[in-house]
Length: 225
Image: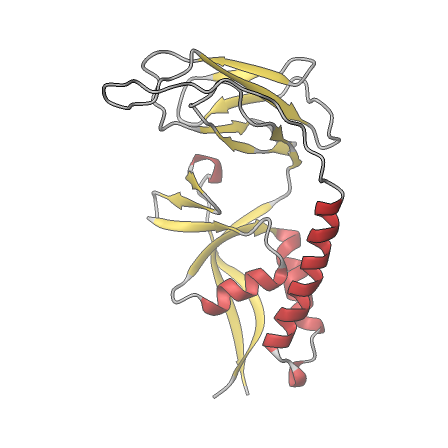
C-alpha cells in the first residue's frame, strides 16, 4: 500500500549541548545517546527529504525551526493527490543547484595567504603542537568582529578578539590535540571551527546569527491511501 509523506516532525526533542558533541564532517556524535546527529542546517528541503526517505533507521537531526517550518510548508503546497516525490525532489534540487551556482559565481575571488606548516617529529610521527594558534573572526556583516569570546571545547583555553577580529591562544607542550573544537561563546552569534594543529594560522571563523535550533529524532508522518 502506498504511503504519502505528509509532515516531518521532531517527536523527541533533545536537550543535549550540540557544541559539546564530537564534530565530524556533516554530523556530530552524541556520547549520551551513542548516536550520530546530522547537521541539516545547510541542507535544502530536497536533501533533507532524500536523507529521511532513504534512511534505514531512525535519523537524529539538527536544524532551525524556520527550516522545519519551510520544509513542511513545501510538503503542504504540493497537491496531495498528484504528489510525485521523484519529480518534486528533482524540482527542489534543480532550484537549489541554480541558487548555489549563482552564489559561487559571486564568490570566485578568494584571498590567498601563505602559512608556515608545523612539522612532525621524525621518531614517532606525532604532530608537533604549535606554541600558539591564531586567526580571525568575521562578523555577519563580513567585517572583523571585535570583543568575541572563544574557547576550545573541554579545555581551559579561551581568547577574546581584538579590534581587528584577531584572536590568539597560547598552547602548552602537553596540549591534547584531540581537543580541536573552537566555539563562540555568545547568545547572539554562533560558530565553530575544527582546529588544524599542523599550522599556527587557522581558517577564518564566520559568525552567524544565533537562530533557535531544534535537535532530536526526526519522524516522517505518513498518510496511507
